Length: 488
Image (cartoon, rainbow, N blue to C red; front, side):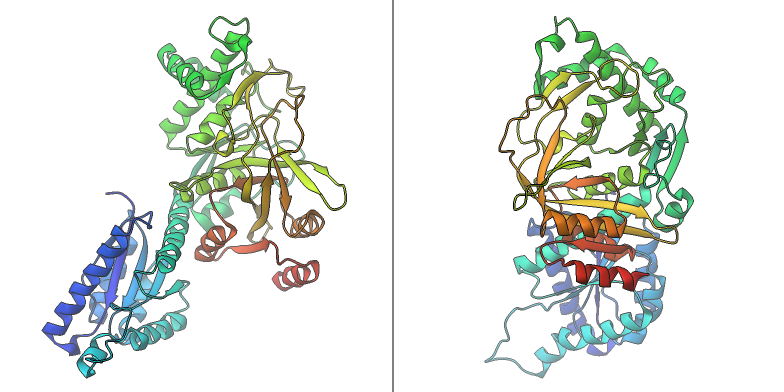
């Protein structure tokens, strides 16, 4: 069974069999209507209505025990006394959305009577449930409005993506080839605390383990990767089938296959490496890492396991949405007053999912690492709104920092820059955004996503009760510093 959301509707036994049959039919109709809307990324399963404490407890325990259930949506169709939900909510370990809706959008003015009022009193029942949930202290998202409203459906969809990201985070395993880049602080962190907090697992491997996996790759897998590269990308002549540097592309394809085989065999969905630990590798995995990110794997350079895991989460959350997500680094600035911009890139590893045009596969010296010239895809990211996200270890807690930006099409050619890149203007402006980022302790590595909004990632953080700071068009340094001081 694939991931799904459970839809649980509350009532009470006092209404009698006929009324409860109507409640059950309406619950199924609402669930089916939401599924059929085409706006929800995750299918919802309608569960039997709950009319007693035993039924609600059993429903929440069952949802918590189901590995394929990634969240629960509740709706009180009628009045449903909150005491019958207290133990149930205490037993619920999955993300919760409280849908405050009713079967019909409009009051039937000419026919409404007390029977209709009793049966359609979510305005009453959901308030009772909300009180109980607050007393229990359970985190939840509340969505208010008619279930056929596109706004309501989009809010449910946003929460579903976040719940899916939380599930993916708990299942993410990061393979770390080599250790952290020496003397770098922000890419390190407490991996045990991360596993206890999020379920995230980070395992270290010697580069020799990866070298062995690369050596075991079959030629037919290499040829399949080469054919895929040639179909999706433009190659410089030297890397074409008869080009004098074709061997470098073959080497990179073999590296990609070796990494993928290693990850898949161990159940890993993310990985890191570092140019300070390449013993036994002919060249740094450049194009290999770019293509693996495009396939949905998380990646972090220089041992950055937190960004690697966060990228994996963003890949899962952004599935089906336009725009991509990539490992990124704030690299250099244009600091002219009135037009300050950030040029983001990395040495090699930027994901083609954010590409504005067909990538060009090139070969250039790296200047770091002492290995052969690595192959890489060169392109510029598409213009449009985006978010830079950073997950950092504060020592006693984790913090998610989000910076909203507008990606731009460069006004100038970049003929001598041999890497993929993105150009953006941070909101509200570079001076404020960069100062806030530095004050918050944000990393130099980020996840750059054009598929997700800051609100999407805030919803993810909300489910996890993860400290989250947002830098956007409304940010002022006075307000941001006040928020930082309140967090301690």
